[in-house]
Image (cartoon, rainbow, N blue to C red; front, side, top):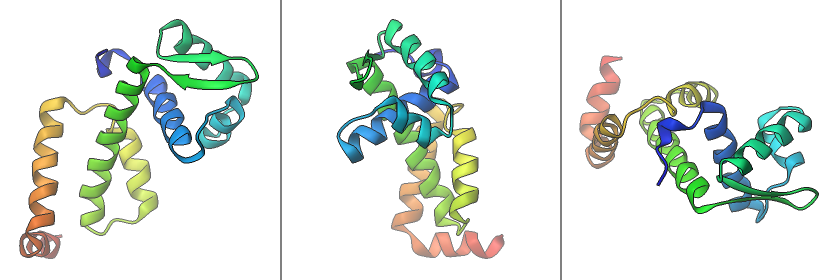
Amino acid sequence: MPDLQSSSTAAQDYLEQIHRLIGSKGYARVADIAAALEIAPASVTTMIQRLDTEGLVVYEKYRGVVLTADGQDIAEEVVKRHEVLARLLRSFGLDEKTIYQDVEGMEHHISKATLRVLITIVEELERNPKLLQKLREKM
């Protein structure tokens, strides 16, 4: 599996979005990716071609984009990081806009060791509502 940290933040964002589009629509096209990321289609095409060259996607003009096994692995790791961070922040009552903005910045820079710590914290807070309430009261 390729190292998540070896791929750029932008590449991770594209792979995450392709993964989400395929999951929700069954396919990912350049126009869909551009709309979701609020980026010009020409810029998306350039990045998709780069990801294709790197072996992370398979791109066929006018047909769409498919993740390779390596691209899928990276996308799933980014999604996992995103979900753990969002669960943690949501448990403290932050609004969804703030959560989205903060998580988009953090999800790319967390080590595997730190992610394991955060997963443990999130799971414990979900199992122990009294502890969560105590922490929320301190805010």
